[in-house]
Length: 546
Image (tube, rainbow, N blue to C red; front, side, top):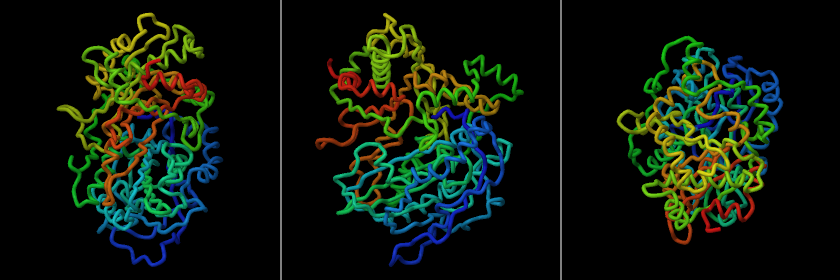
């Protein structure tokens, strides 16, 4: 979940140049595929349609237009150094292709979905055996039958929130295949600038200003054998859980099977609806729930001062500003024991991370936060599952950030993992018990046109917050993406920003993924990361005895 109510978008049309290259010797395209004719090209603004706060700021709009070309050059996988074997638009088979935009059926999005427009999710998987791109494309086309919106284009032009969604144009989603001189053994083993080459990453500016593809896939065939599969999906159509389940559905289809959990569910009417009231009453209701609006212009200023950038990732810290900390199986067990009897892994890791960051950033670690400073702890809950929750296969944004504790640095009653766990446990329980309500309140902020959250958004933008998100189970599914040549040897999951992301351990020493503890993906402000990169800080975060 990204705090995007302060972000903005306007409707435009993506117009791409024709004549995409098809590799020599390839046979005529099958049903569901055609040469990619909406590849990289100029942008034409179709309608103003500004609807969220940031894009209404003239300076931000001007910056967006000015950064369009360099953003594409930095992020676009269509590098002049690549040898392109094929570039194909995968479409829903046996359906009309390229339906006129104005007459194509509209699949509505929620306000929460629309607020996530500037964000793009990505994943990269490394396969030791070379992927069969022909079979991969056929499976993708078949999967699009259940996911037709991924072959469509965003339509956000209408000021009426109920008329924003995805036009089922069947323009297709790009699937490109390129070759590389990189060998499998020399692939980068972590997210960094180097791994972006394996993605066809649509710049957020293109997505925010218009109808770029909401899903892209790229296969890089490596020298000596092996492949890298890079996929990107707009956060406007789903959160990370829906993204991963789509990839599972694609891999299952390649094996001739359906998704074991059933078909996706798109119906936004299933979301808990905000109460019907005027904007003033809605604002007061939200304030009473702790969702108090902030000035998006000031928030933007705080974000930029903290070191966030506008490209390549919207309002995120720079690509190299990342750290991966392995937590061994033994250390993980030690952290859970420190959390006390009955503590879950999630509770223990959440408490451990808060305690170590509070020590590092406070006076004890020579940090920049004074004693007594409130350092919020935030977690993410999904409204899927359970008797009253959304269907497990709900495809949309249904995960919400919730404050689970407003704890003070230097509090003498917060000196151990157990003490911190006891302090945040009521908040964790509250988040789980009220998850549907938090999703409703989040939707209400869009209805009221507010930048309002359960946590302090300004502290979030500044990076002075411990946002701990445990995604071990869902990201483990990336290691089950077998398209016919075996499972990936390494999967780099969607990298979230401004948080400590807990994910499954990678395969190592003969042990499969998830069998050797967890990994902490840390992405915080540059001044925080500078302190975290010391051997002692890494050891403490990893749970070593120090």
